[in-house]
Image 1 (spheres, one colour):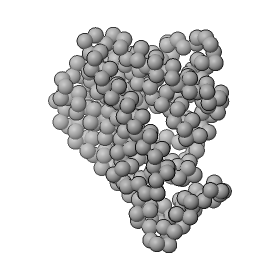
Image 2 (cartoon, rainbow, N blue to C red):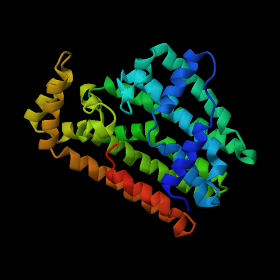
Image 3 (cartoon, rainbow, N blue to C red):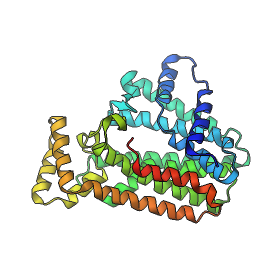
Image 4 (cartoon, rainbow, N blue to C red):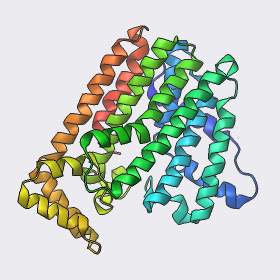
Length: 324
């Protein structure tokens, strides 16, 4: 079995050989730029890992891994516009470096290219892959809309929030793993189990992202820390803080959430102080651990040799201690 780093290397070499330097350059430069920002390439690597687990030939799934990476970056470009985010992976976001219209159009073209890669060398699996990809793409859009809806809601429950991040983030990781399993010719039951492993790990991954947004080191995290606080994002941290706060603390939180004009650093510090008082980090980390352990239990049920599961287990463990 190949390691995660070996699979990342295989995908990065494949990516470097894909040619997107076309005309008009105003369309393709933003496209190239976001792909050049790097990142962990987690989702395409999970496609390759899913294929490797069942066929021991990860490279069979390289086009589908590329499809997932293009879709992911398309969604990031559009999300950054909607969030008015200044940074992505430590660099200016596409709409900041170029302009909003170019970022929208480049993102649209990435989605079309994603389908082109999805069907490459897919043979008899093409219908299953397209059905899975379409279902996931719609769910990601639903998750993003719920996320935007939450900005205008006074209260959001933990259950609502977890469903939103499942759709916005986790289903794509589940899709990536199942896509690899399909290309690797897994049976339907095991392919679906692997989807569930990816979905549960995806929720854990997003909860860790929420934690890092508030408690992480900005240089390691690669994005502006405290961004969720500044934007009043209804993350698990804020929802739990509102539920656990005493009346005085709830008034403080509500006042900061309702302010239209404020000093960003002052707001982040004030809410972070409340998070520390309420032990919010530990609460969020406990929830993350629950999804991680559930994912590992589902992995146990997949009918392949234990050795074939090692790479995924190692990846999942790294998820718990990552800083970016």
